Length: 211
Image (cartoon, one colour):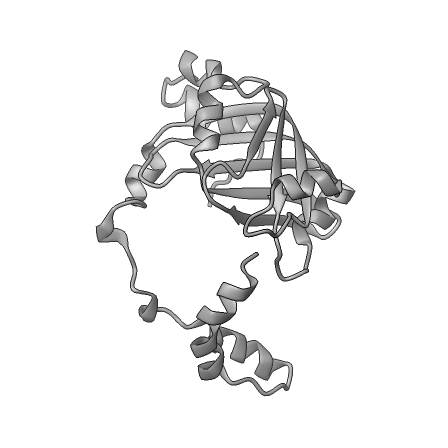
């Protein structure tokens, strides 16, 4: 099995052997700030994926709120509210030990995505957290990111995946329920767990704890 283990081999496989090069557009799209076009995409995005890397390894975490939840403070700074969660604090622990982060913004029914990377810090200023309040509940903290790179990705991946197509939708009942997945881990830890009750009560629990 042939493997690519050096940059020369990588570029030789993708560029030289196929007589290809990086297009000018692909080079131009990467900038060191959020311009007005990128800001419009970010403000319409209700969902992003946050990648971090710390002492405990890599983490990739979903973040979502109504569109506009990510604040573009200025071309070099964006802020993301951190909401109530499971208190594992995986992403936040990583940021404390290594501030480098990467973000991928998605917008329903839009093929392009926006990639942003930079250095993050965790801010717990009371007024700032209140400014991100939803349903009267302030953010637990705010992740403030100094932008180093911003780039928009073309539609190919989302077109190939048919992510936004109704024909790609999966019925939730066709997959293991949340309760059944938790039950397996509970049994591994020799604990009793009522999966059916958990699944039945979860919608109401979600309403009370989402913020």
